[in-house]
Image (cartoon, rainbow, N blue to C red; front, side):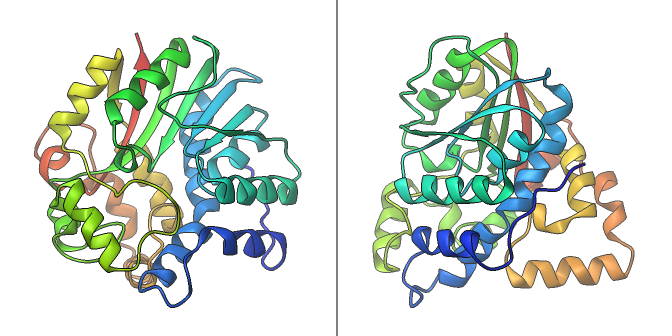
Length: 287
């Protein structure tokens, strides 16, 4: 798999400054690490979605963030439309694409109201996005609308019911936040100094709700957790960004235990994915 070159110092770190909160914010280091790991999360998307795409496929990266997935897919020949509501993140995506030498079309728009015609895309990327929109059902309907018949939506989103997320919320690293309703998370965010971008407070989904929303949108979902786990076992930064988690992954790798990760993870609709798995990786096909 071709790797996207990101400069260690220069355009990319400078662009990151525009999407981060004040360095005094209590979550500054955590969110900086998340954005800096965008390259590896993007490679995970390309690794999983790329083999399913035809040559010169049209891909819509909704909520592209700082552009990791957009650039990784463009580097493999896809025509990528990077969609964001935050101008600063689009600027970061443009800087990353320029540094990597690949074309990415930037679209300033709400994913719940896409300025795209029906059935124009071969694939849609929703990486860490569903939990950040007020109406995930509307977002999924829009994703299905722009997909061609047989097109695929790559979706990754954290599991509201996982005890791992209850112990340490994926956005804040604090216990209990993941199970709060959105209105209480908004109050919590204000107390912590707000978010780095003008986005709704995150509200995690349960598997029951996610399956219902997928069905309503006309998408047939299949778990792809095991394929993601194989990639993460080779490159932990595709899933982990907090220094503590990376140190733990390095320790597990030294003990040669990380190779067992794909065997623990499964794609069945059972206990693991209902109640244990902290983050789902899904391929959803349009009917």
